[in-house]
Length: 448
Ligand code: HEM
Image 1 (tube, rainbow, N blue to C red):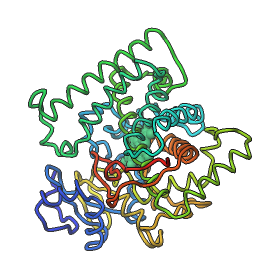
Image 2 (image 1 turned 135 degrees about the vertical axis):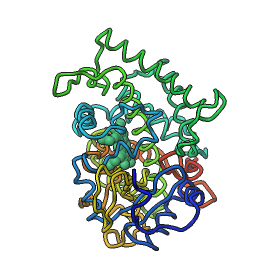
Image 3 (image 1 turned 90 degrees about the vertical axis):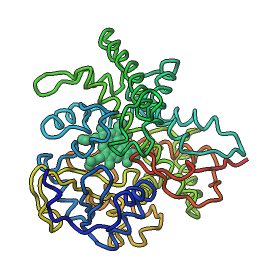
C-alpha cells in the first residue's frame, strides 16, 4: 500500500489517540465537526488503521454504490469483524466469491418470505412485554435484544422454544457481550493473553458457540430435518455450479446473520421508541392508527400482516433510522486508483460513506435534527440520500427482514403498553462495538 504518500483531503490536526477517543465516545459530534470545517471529503485518522476518506454527498455515494464490487472492496474494510464472523462470511468477502455467497443467501430474505416469520416476531415481542410489570422502570435496549435474538434463533436457525434455544441464547449472548467492548475494535487489542484477557475470553466464548452451531448443522444434515427457517433453505441451496455450502461456510454465515441482524435491529427499535415517546402527540396518533386497524379487521389483537402494513409505524421506523443510523458509516477499500470527490486516491485507500451526515443534510431534510415521520409518509427517498442499510452490491441482505420485524415489534409495544421516558438525564448515543445505542439502554417506565 502506498497510501501514506498520497495527497489526502484535509482532516483534524489532532493526535490520532484523541480522534480515536472521540470516534469511540462521540462519533456523531466528530463527523459533524469535520463536515462543518472541511465539507466533503475529509480525512479521519484512527489508531491502528490507515486514514479513512469520508464522503456523504449524493454524487459520491452514487459513484461508490454503483460499483460492481471490483473497485470498492467492502470485505477488506470489514476485516475487524473477521475474528467473530470467520473469513467465509459474506461480510468479509469481495469480488466473485462475495457474489456467490450473496446469491446463496438472498432468496430466504426475499420480502414475501418475511411474512411467514411474522408470528414468531409477534410471539417474541409478547414474551418480552409479559415480563413488564405496571409501574416498573427498566432499560428497553436489552429487552429489544432479547426479542431480536429470539426471533433470529427461531426464524434463521430454526430452533423451537425450549432448552436448546435457551442454551444457544446463553452462548450467543455471551459472545456478543464480550465482543461488543469497543476497545476490541482496535487491531492491537485483539491479542489472546489467556482465558482471563478480554480477547482470550471472547475467543473461548466463540469456540463454545461454534461447538453448538456445528452440532446443529451436522444434525440437520444427518436427519434431513427441514423447516421454514433460513438454515433449512441454506442447507439445500446450490450455487451456479451446483455446489452446496460447506459446514464452515454455513457456520460463518449463520454467525454473520445473527451478529448483523440482532444488535442492529434491537438498537433501531430502541431509537424508534425513544423518538416516539419524545414527540408530542405521536403516541396518540400511533395508538389511533393501531386501534383503527384492529377495529377494521375485527380482531382482538393486531395480526402480524396488519402490523407490518401500518403507514405511520413504517414512517416512524424509517425516520428513526434516518436520525439515528445504528451503523454510522459504510466503508470500502480501493482496489485500484480512483478519483473520488475531487481527489486522486491510490489503491488501498479506505473510503467511507457517512450514513449519519448524508441523512442530516438540510437540503434534503429541512430541520434535520427534528424527528418527523411525515418525511417518509407517501414518499420514497433516494438511495443516495437515505441508506441506513448501505447500498449497491453490498446492501444489507436483511433489510426487508429488519424493517418487517421493526414494524411488528413497534406496533405491538404501542398496542399493548403505555410507556414514558424515565431517565432524568439527556439521552445520548453510546457505542456498543460498531452500533450506537441510546445511553443507559433507554430507561422507560410502564404506566401503573
Ligand atoms: C435495523 C437493522 C439493520 C441495519 C441498520 C443494518 C445495516 C447494515 C449495513 C449498513 C450493512 C453494510 C452495507 C454496505 O456495506 O453497504 C449491512 C450489511 C449486512 N446485513 Fe444488515 N442491517 C440490519 C439488519 C440486518 C438483519 C436483520 C440481517 C439478517 C438477518 C442483516 C444481515 C446483513 C448481511 C448478511 C450484510 C452483508 C451484506 C454484504 O456484504 O453483501 N442485517 N447491514
